[in-house]
Amino acid sequence: MAFSLSGPLLYSWKPPVLFVRKWKWVVVSSLLMMLLFIPWDIGFTQMGVWGFDHRYLVGLDIVNLPIEEWSFFIIIPFACVFVYEVLNYYQPFTIPTRWVHPIYIGYGLFVASLAIVFRQNAYTFYASMLTAVLSLGIGLLRPRWAANFLRMYIIIWIPFILVNGILTGMLTENPVVYYHPEHIIGLRVISIPVEDSIYNFAMLSMVIAFYHWLPKQVQSQSSD
Image (cartoon, rainbow, N blue to C red):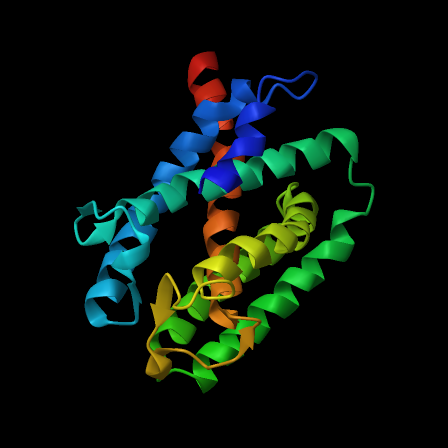
């Protein structure tokens, strides 16, 4: 978590992006996302879908979730939105969004099919169903940020593999986060269950959607 936070936090004050000015929108967007993901996380932990090796943790739990897990839902979106903003500023996307929306539709249909085929695997089913709804919604509603989000999601695969790989046992004797084999497909990228990438798509797309929606709502209320 410290590694993920250090770069974005250090460069938040650096012009011309000045990401510090957008902190409040990132935090509020993450909190709104957590209204869904924290109960989900608590439920899955209690069900044994996944668990945590407390030998690697500081030992402070809140509602049966390690403090590190709570921090994950703030720090990871913060770091990803920072990447999103830096990319948007220095490399504006010139690809027409109409070319991107079919990708969302196709991905939504793909993960929906995963949910149907692997409906007995709890993590696969719920992560895929939520992602299918969100991906199809983006493809149909065509928000202006769709192309930029897709680019960011692809680029963050590099730190995602490093950070999540460490958490799932890539460099440790035992994984920090472990998964019950009955609740996942069993397909992994190095040590990372493929469901984690689907889960992250849902989490981050919700954050970005709120990140763009919230300032508009505040501006609209101010003008009224």
